Amino acid sequence: MKYIITFLITVSFATMAQEPELEGYTSVYANYTFCKLNDGATFDDVRPFVGKYVENANSFENEVALAVLFPLYASDPDHDFFFVAHADSREEMGAFNDKMFQIFAQSEDNAMPPMDCDVELEAFQRVGPSSSDAAPQGRTIVNYWPCKYTRGFDRRAMREARRQAALKHYAAGAEGGYRYIMTNSGTDREQDVDFWFSTSAPSEAARGKNIDLWWSEIRNSDEWAEVRKHASCQDSETYAAYPLKQ
Image (cartoon, rainbow, N blue to C red; front, side):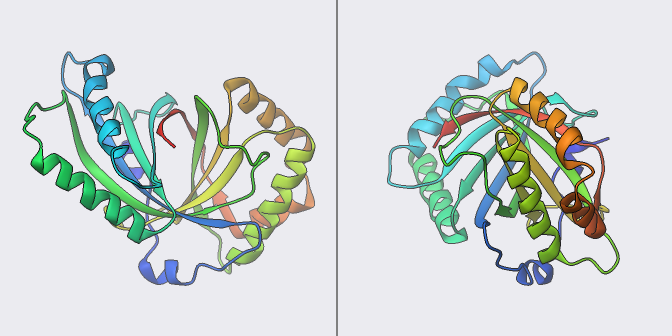
C-alpha cells in the first residue's frame, strides 16, 4: 500500500462546513509534510536542517507545535518520515508559514537537505479528551486508522459515543488521547476514505496496555456498539512521534 497517498484522505469543504460542535472536543488545524531520504542518506544527515528549521520557528512569537514521526508498524510506506505542524486556527498556521517563508527567502544558506519532501497535506481535526491535561513529553506512539462512514451515519452520535468510550477507557487505566482527522488541500480525492481516526500513547508499554484494556473493557461495550453504527475502520498503522517544538 502506498501509504504516502492514503495516509490522510479527504472529505470535501462542504462536509467540513457541517462539522458539529461537540462537548469535550477542541478544533486543531494541521499541515503534514511527507519526506523520503535520498539514496545513501540517513536521518542523521537531515538533523542539521531540521535543527535550523526549528531554530527559525522559535525565533518569532507563535504557538505552532512541530513534530516528526517515523513508521514503526506500517504497510509499505512510501516515505521515511513525516513532519506535522499544529495550530489553533488556519490564520495562525498561515501566518507561521508566511513568516517561515520570509526567513528562508532572506537566508544566504542555499544548502539542500538530502531528502525529497514533495507531498504536503492540510487537515482539520477534532481532538477528544485525553487521560491527562499535561502536554506529552518525549516520544509518543501514534496509531492511524482509515475510516468510512456507514449509510445514514450520525457524526454527532458517533463522536459522543466515542468520547464516552474514551472516558471509560481512561477510568480503567488507559493513557493518552485521540482525535478525528479530516483532510482537505493536497489530498487524493479519489481514495475511498472519509476520515482518519488516531490515538496516542506516551510509550509502547502504554500503547500495549491501552490495547489490552480496549479488548477487555471497551470492545463489547454499549458505547463501542454505538460507534460502530456510524463508521467502520481498516487496520491501523503505528508511528513514533518526537516533538520538535511545543
